[in-house]
Length: 106
Image 1 (cartoon, helix red, strand yellow):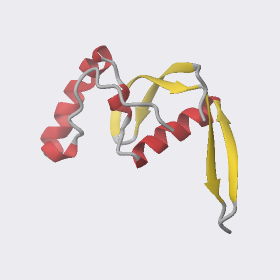
Image 2 (cartoon, rainbow, N blue to C red):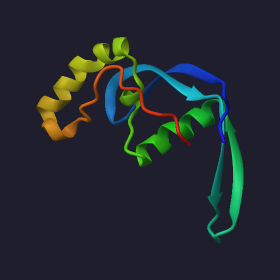
Image 3 (tube, rainbow, N blue to C red):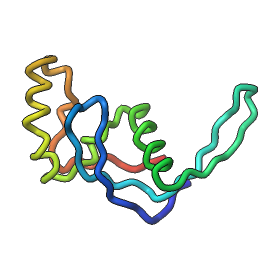
């Protein structure tokens, strides 16, 4: 489950050093998981914890924070992305297009 309400906050990522931009995230989310003994449990995350969980869950889905950036923020980080591509090769960046907002499915 997730809230209908969303917040826009500046986010960055260790995968993209010295870059950041506004990212929309749900204000709260409820997740179902299993403990170490295999017992299911549910937990509600709010505020910063909800934002952090969504950010990290995105990584599991192959989505990075720059996939959420609007065109303006993407243009701002593009020079740094180009530098990363030069340093690590074309396969070292996601190839995200400006305005290509990832779905917020949890």
